[in-house]
Length: 174
Image (cartoon, rainbow, N blue to C red; front, side):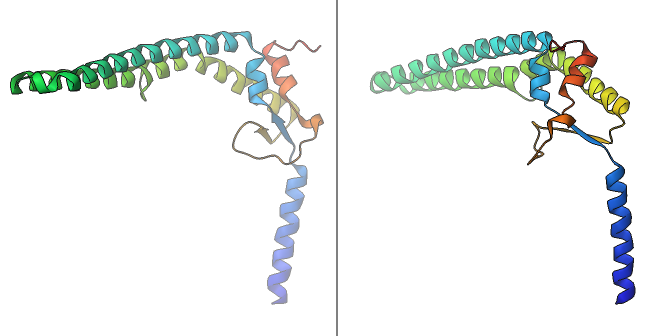
């Protein structure tokens, strides 16, 4: 038993010793991105596209709703053949609207492709800057305050957001 406790103490001491040698930093990715004019412009363009497409889809659904209400009101007067024709038209329009929604907002939709075109290069540039700042500062780890990682306390002297902005050439606080 004493041997097991001794071994655990040695392992713990080595582990703590190696942790003390590690240097950590953190960045605020939201702050960095919002400090980059190209990101703001790309985000504005994405928001506008998204709103325009959403409006287009909502108009299609409003037309479908109008057709359905007209069908309900006239249903009693229609022959079976006319009913089937109207029902098929409504179903087809709904399918078209869903296809449009998927084409614009789906996993491989236009919004995703536009995001890859406009925002991904900026995020890659920021990532490379974070890596360069970490290498230059001899940091083992840089955390992002805006990810799922929770930081209960952060000493501002370890915030490397300004260094990343300096590296990118966007820092105005000099």
